[in-house]
Image (cartoon, rainbow, N blue to C red; front, side, top):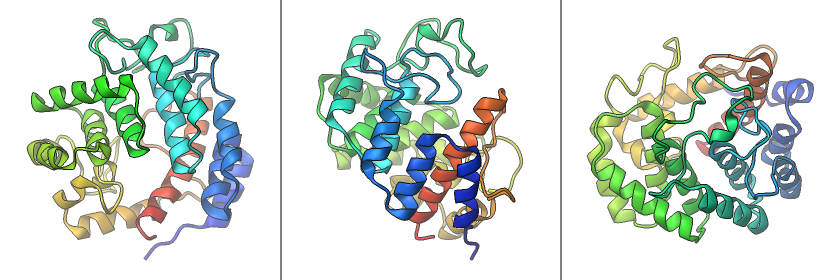
Length: 287
């Protein structure tokens, strides 16, 4: 069984990681204080309650963005640093900026004029995104949040799932995250049964974790032992993915991403974020 080198990861983050990811690492590995993660997340907050300032490294504008809000909520959740003030402000921003149908757009218009990844482009019709809405609603439900924005987003997700046809990997990952956390468990199980053929399509999931390119493995859809999608994959597939994840640590102690490195700064920040996320995923799976 391959095991990660924790000391090497610490050295990598000390030399290359953002303060946020250093604090996440300390919280995960050495029992550092949750308040330090909370404070690091809060540094990216805007007066409108949302988050920006390249908290999500691919969108490098100061203004609030849905994916930056999701990054903030995930960090708070992971570190058990959930903060009612930060979360409440984020929910108010989501409510104020929601499209007419509810939910959240993929990229807000304020990205215009700022550096961003090529795929960070606002959709012309301004409709809600399955990706951002599913991720945000899933994380909020996982923490038992209650808010009118979440109520509308949840109904929107159920409606979109009911009519869902072939979809991209990121859409299906967001749907799986939503289904893992939404309170109506019986409905979630039924919905997972419905979308199982979509997730297991060769066009969506790659069973060989060592395959080259921007792939999505079983762990991306079933990151934890209790994930609903875990039953879609043989245990040997999950173990192979965990072995590969542990073995993907580079000589400098960090992990990297398998998508386009469009900016040196964004690539470096993603490496720090992914290093902590890789360790957190391994730990959640008993590694």
